[in-house]
Image 1: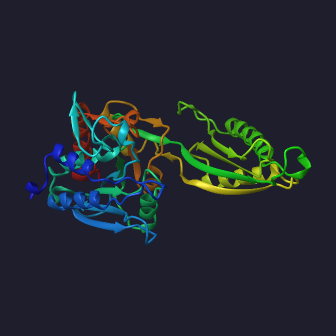
Image 2: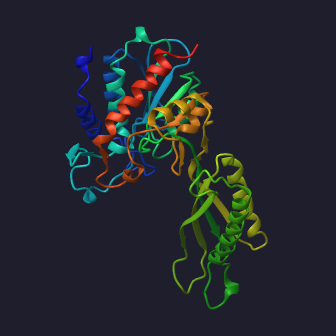
Image 3: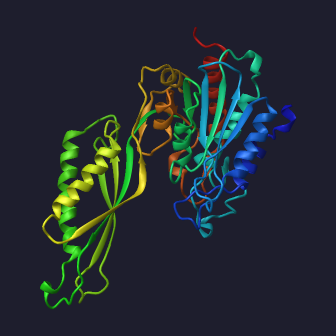
Length: 390
């Protein structure tokens, strides 16, 4: 049965060769079918029961799937989770074909190899050592879609209503550091609409650009209030942040600006509710231009990821710290952790890649990170599935 599973480097190569870009730009967005079908075949080959769950909501959109695989029976156990998609890429910035695994100087290069297709061959290499008959609690492998764009895979999984394991490990690139917390993320667009007119007479129009100046001032004052109210020194940046990312408005110096759009990125502390913050932002903007004759339109560029936090006294965090030989920490990037926690799992984020290599040309994974990750996962499965506490 194990003969159906390729050698680890070969499985790395096959996964990298299967394009699975997810993007909010429909021209770049791709299906993840090839990746999940590869994983499904390999996992079935070592005895897992596999489900492929379609999550595509629009007929014209590429097919998207979540995969849930289970070895063993019962409640509890361990979930090993990762996403199957990659970010878009700039081919001319790569030194080699991004879809061909390339080994150089003790590193393997390829699109998504660090973030985070490398995780699945490592999981397979470990899981093939275990038989269902020796597991007292089940081992799950979870592979999701669209983590890099909309989180539709994680959202669909949370809405699916099926109970999975009690503990979870997400193999995102953390440099082998256990992670128990990250901030929440929102990305919002604010469009102010006014009236165009000849610049020689301000009374002929109503400047959306000047209105946006007022809006930006109000948001900056609100940012200071939030940073006084919410502070957590466990993060390297210990307060919520609001970044003014883009601004576009007007079309000519001699015409009063009729429309101006601002996009902002908000990084929120785990206790801050996304919907409350979004509502507060929109109320703030509307109040700041009240009586001006201007109007505002709002759009969520990215619906957001809730903040994530797992109790550092939880068993999965304590075991991960012991196996890694280091304390758990926090990161600035978002993961599917909050969705797994919401499903009743205690979740640790822990993987062999380095976030500094993610989302860029010539992405790589150091081969030296693979043996310790193999050891960590082997012992995690033994602890939570073979010899779980009664």
